Length: 189
Image 1 (cartoon, rainbow, N blue to C red):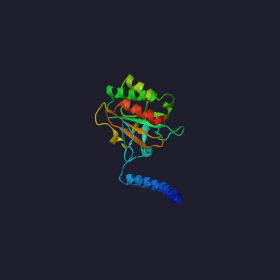
Image 2: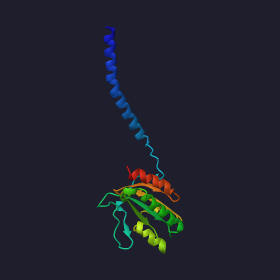
Image 3: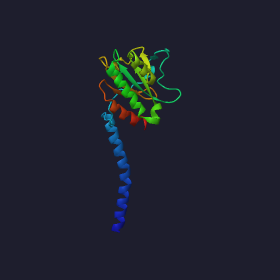
Image 4: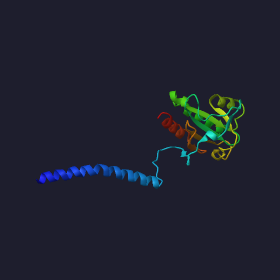
């Protein structure tokens, strides 16, 4: 008789344990959300908070005057936006070449990332070389000015999702290798 009561007790205990664990995990997640905790994902850039959608930002393309489409109608692609301040010096060119190389390391997936440069092109051969791998545009309304570096020769970057949502900012002085690591995680997911 004692074994029967013990079996009933343990059966009921197990039956209440499952929903209790579920409810406690829900309460813990809700409490973490209310306190503002977010899980951390190791990124070399800084998350853009609050998130913004760039589809309303007008970028006019140099050369033909067309408007940049943040949402690529042919194929969803992310955009890496490089911004410079003033004249693009040799340091700026070096950074842009490293970013182009980071795209190349994506291999077959490199078509999922477009490169958009907003700033003054360097003169001469360097400018012509950049135009082969970068789209070149102008921020018509100056809405990206808060992301621009503050001194000549510096480059900052933004990673923009295929739907136009800005994800991560890489301020001037960022590590191109770190950005390359982030691109490989995001593009190859």
